[in-house]
Length: 260
Image (cartoon, rainbow, N blue to C red):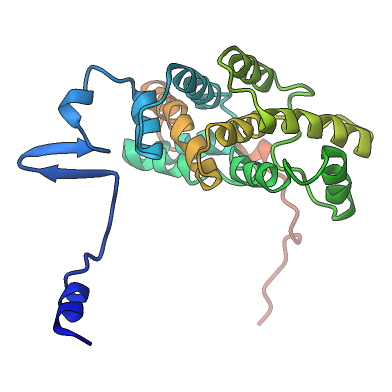
């Protein structure tokens, strides 16, 4: 090994980033001075810039904004909200309670976006939606991004695609997502609506944002709703939430004596 090569290897930085840097008492984000961005770009534009490295077009910003609004809040009785409120009621700090809510986001609550986007990417140019639906049924697998406990047709998905069409971002992934909705109903004999996770997944693909960001996107949007619920818990609820006995069914063994 030459002295020059050895010197280069020793000087290799343990971390590399193309996102931001601090130089001469100034912060830069993707090459832009942070002070130039403040007051001139929206938070949605800043998110896009951080993820993609460039500022979005007006159309991209509008669609991404709609996606964030659609996922920010839904209802109180979902895992991320219940967990956050319970955590705060136990005496944890505000941010700790928010973290508890964020940790409750999973494959069955807001976390199907990455799996749905991956499915769209892998199949959109290779298979018809009907074939994908039949393969999922044969494998006895759920279709990520489809089905909902409340909706037979998710109005959030319909509205997001309406916004996408208005901004010329309704492309092949959105079309495939809607085709798969129809194919799943035909294959399974019942309606499995394209839910908001599936719609967001298709739009992330249209925006060419890495599918692995899926759960991160939902967490980013829903943290606003979580924060609002934690604040409400702080303002109106008594400490230490607990279920009343009437809401709990004991299914273990009956009372018994310990004989020793």
